[in-house]
Length: 309
Image 1 (cartoon, helix red, strand yellow):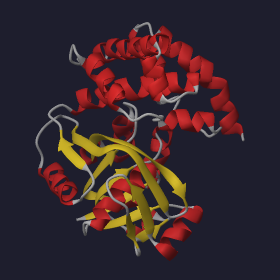
Image 2: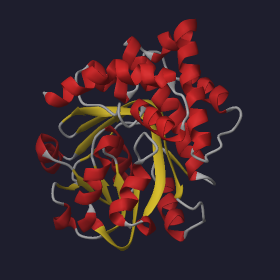
Image 3: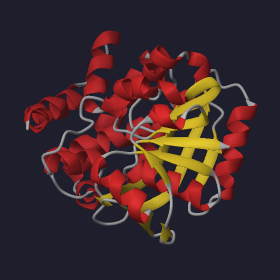
Image 4: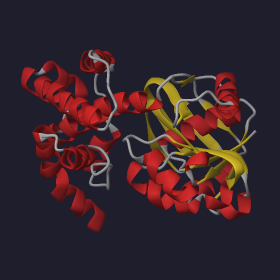
């Protein structure tokens, strides 16, 4: 199996690195100093699941030089997916499977618009990891997990083959879900809420969850996403908020979401694909989203400034 990782940051570097470590033929699409370091020194991953160093990796900044592959895992930021869909076309052959691992609920549709729905499955991941420097990824929290499935929820040989590849890799869990839409929205319920509240308050998640006022804000934001999901014909379980809060309570002290870190450090973030998407979809469906509206509009000017610099 040949797999291309488009976007070799904290997510792509970790999951692609684990697949390559297990013997899968992986090509990393990267750029700049990160690409130079990977070509020269390989890929180093520091992980709570066990450090590893791939001394030699296949890496390129030119998808056309790689050619068609069996699977493309798109691990860019959510806002970069439309651009990524155009860039990865040289990697996509008649039988290529493409899966986005982004936060948010729009990636599969954006990939399908460019590449065709037959090539795309839905997916997401769970991990706290980040780019630590050229050729260097750090995994700092959460047992890494990939969840994916066909858009129409059918069973497929291509998903089973990819699952088998993940199962041979150490340091991660993988699952084909029965309903990829519910699964994606359940992840979105968690990440958009804690990201927005964390970015506004600028404190780690353990402080937000232990302070009654901000805990209530997170719960209210999650409830709004349940309402929007229902309007989009995705029915989340009745205990979706309760289960998401249980996961929030299980995270280590000091944990922060990637969107929060990006905003606090003045970098472009996934604000538009997370809280902005809730507001946008809510408006389209006639669902009120006052908490996400507050979060999105409070952070919007910082986001614009980051994109202008």
